[in-house]
Length: 282
View 1 (tube, rainbow, N blue to C red):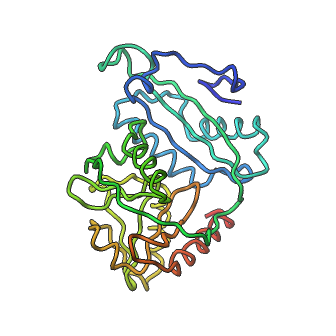
View 2: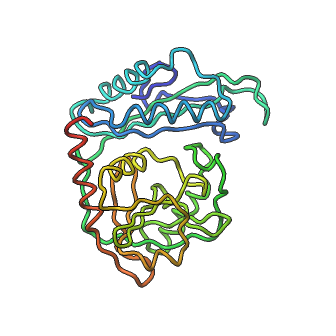
């Protein structure tokens, strides 16, 4: 089932207008959350990112859009899809109401919530190879709009097609300053010795929720020096480890970039700490 504006509908009967502004203009945001046995992981961070993004796009936030209301809407669709006792992905889409051309008639919003099953209750490391390359056909703009989870994701779509056609598992996206921004659907971390770097938001990377969690974990590990700093393509081949993060997959080590192969020691350690925090509800 799908939740459209609070109405629960069977997938086959759920419809939206052809004037939907998300379809016509990309005038929409989405938030993807992971739910484990009825518990939404990192819900506070997801909620505040969504609210901040809506404000940034000058959307009118409905009075009922409280954390408690949206949490219940998520759990209801999870339960209706018989996923309450397992792990699942839930996608919340918010678009400005239909009407107008580039200039909308209203800043009021509509929403949809969808749920689908996942395979594992906790994050795991896949030991299979995971090879990355650069995607340089198009570049990310290093500005605040690039940090949002908006429906404007053509670079990610084209990068995904490029990776599939050329036998890679992911691509690194590059901004107009020729700095590495992120992977196709994940934030990037680079490990060199005891220094861990991740691109800053000012370079145009997504304000990832799991990126935030990893940075919080690293704050409590004094043996590491953490830098939010620009990463050049040249630095990738000098790193000891590269790993990417998102709330659905967790931490994914990059095993190869060009001719360089990488270890995954730090990634495995951080994943263990992350899973422990999830089990303890932290």
